[in-house]
Length: 320
Image (cartoon, rainbow, N blue to C red; front, side):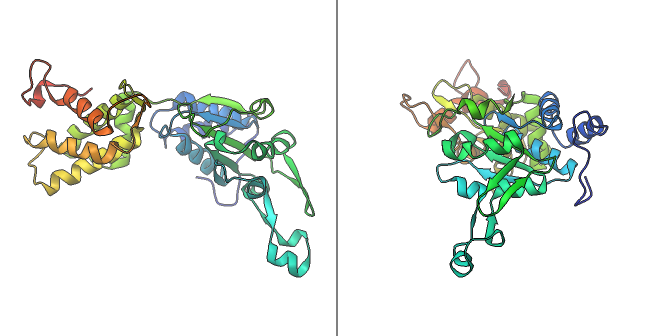
């Protein structure tokens, strides 16, 4: 990690980019290609949009890059309440009444803070922000500077970047980006990882490695991935659901006194944990006449019930 207050060389083709990639990759599970693409874009001085569903390591990747470079990562949530004044900054009303407008009573917003510090301005759910707010970014992205009334011209440090994220599966309350905005952004698609990588993420984030975890981790990943392909589900759970599921299974098994992963009560205990960890993360299709609990029960039966009958026999089924 960089020494606080000291920025690494972030120029295009800088001598440290290759070595930085190796150090950043060590903090991630998988994501080698996406990391290379994102790192190449920001090292080239470009702004970036990361497009993908929640829980696909977008924030983790940006944290790793900014920590390696020794610069701040400023978070902004894109929503209808994000006004240009909240993004850029405003003058303190109380001081304005006492002293009139001046540069001293200007309260910097996250955009100005990121520009002054040379950090990344990370706007989550970018396409939920109002169009006039996104347009406030145009000058900062094009000229690396913004003109603030009664303050003057604020010029960004060389490592300043605008990085946005969008969920391609969520079209409720979102707006289509204007050509002016999208034309200034490079784009990297970050999709779900494969089952092996997600099992690695669950093992890493949960910290569980006992006998129960060795069964619960692949089971948790299998049912979580199944929520993404169920015909009644518009958007399934991210790997965060699998992490929570593994942790809840572990605690619930302890509360019920399960002897281990082969205890006959494990399947039902696992299902109960599924309802806790995943039911709130499943977004059903508007036309589906079902409930998250019914969907999860179907997925659970596919995992734990043999195809040839209805008698519970977890040994006859394989995860997924």
